[in-house]
Length: 384
Ligand code: FDA
Image (tube, rainbow, N blue to C red; front, side, top):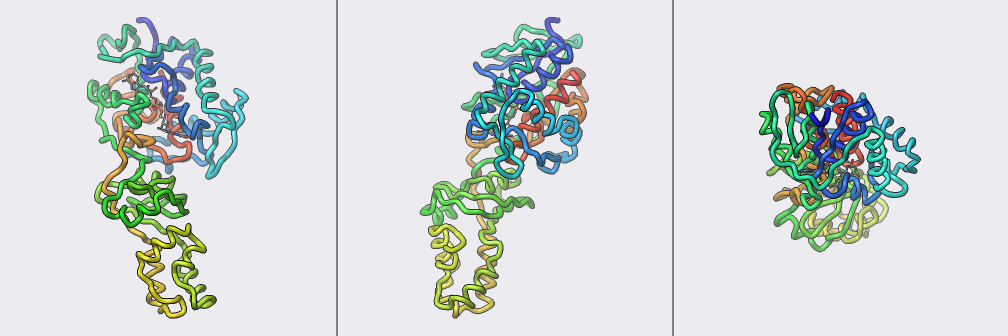
């Protein structure tokens, strides 16, 4: 036996797990095929890493078992991670909606985690290919090393050009752990014919409430030449299923706005009313789409109600998503049914753990995915 613990994947979750276990006294080997640790951390949050969210709760995560994330999130909270950031003297700020970012660079978060690993005596081996995993006599054998415990922290297949792979699912299969079908999440949606009408306003962004699959998010939506993007759409995409509609509420007080225009400016036309509340080019497309030709003074209550209804439930039928190449995260993954929610250890394979994005727990946009990586990494690192 060369080590007490082997951690596969030096990303957010693997670095946290390795540091935690190392500092608790375990001899830890951390392996990654990349030439650098924490590559996704480095590009996250536009290079400033949205490292947690002050409002983190289990409700901010999707999983077949919505209760699974609770234990880890409560035992290693957003405040614990923030305290670590502050101990390392990293300056931070809240951008919006509880999202905490580095003032400087995401490189500081990776440097902090590497220092924590060094403090735990973790041996880090980069550019190491992981082929077969041997298992017998209570030991795991990987890349020439052996240990009685193995943590799988290899993430999901989103953004393959960053070195992301689906190896976690192959390992799960090897050990008989079920996998919830992985799918791209926090991802732009593509529109077929629907996109035609909006192609001219590619690049226009507007505040909306976007709904899909029973969830609704009030943030910006962006019209693109292929479909829809922006934070509200990325959030809704995680709840979208093929064939289902996505609805945009573009003007939450539409009826009031239209009635007021009819009362105060009877000569005005719909396009001008809308352009007071929405970007000009969007107002133009919408006015043409809802087909209200008359001056506001000549519109009936019924017409106002119809137009308001359309503006509040502009419905799209996406043809798909931009796929794993553009997805910020992967939803689905190793089934939580197979794991202990306290330790992340596989119920059927003593000594085997899975954490982070490899597991069927997916956060909203806004620092939640890293908080899950820290919390699940800490839980497994403590236990291993
Ligand atoms: P992660 O992907 O970080 O690490 C997996 C590691 O395993 C990698 O180092 C990889 O090289 C290694 N690996 C994979 N396959 C392997 C193989 N076959 N052999 C050996 N090693 C292998 N989240 C958030 O909360 N705030 C944010 O600001 C952002 N921003 C963001 C921007 C962009 C562009 C992306 C793509 C994603 C984000 N995220 C985010 C999501 C966040 O990056 C993600 O959820 C976490 O990095 C997941 O952490 P893990 O450690 O589970 O996987």
